[in-house]
Amino acid sequence: MFTNTKKILKVKETFLNLQGNKIKNIQKIINNDGKPKSKLNMTIKGPSRKQVIISISNENKSKFMEISSTYITNLNRALRNIKSEAMADFMCSNWESIIIVTNKVASPLDLQTIEKYIKSSNNIEANKVKVLWLS
Image (spheres, rainbow, N blue to C red):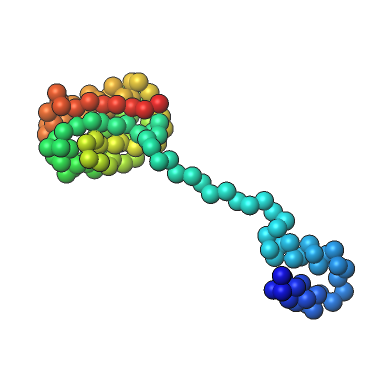
């Protein structure tokens, strides 16, 4: 309370000719009381619709992630060939899957293209790969 009064007196000393209600308005501006509080953007804890999740065995995953940047480039080329608006932004992995994050929600045709590309990769055993997508 004392610091608030001190701040009000400092405003009054700075602007000698101001009325009490204008000093109160300046104090609100200084304290950000006059505008609504900004909300923080929340992050998503679980998978979003822009994530294509590929369930894959550990040995396949390690082989695949070694040259993931090449796979992203080639995957985007395959998606452009079918005139898709969704493009792969990046790829990451967790303990039993690979996650491909796209710029837009992937359509069923996009998912088929991704699955076909992943299963046709040289280093991958296709029977141990399952493409999932959460909506």
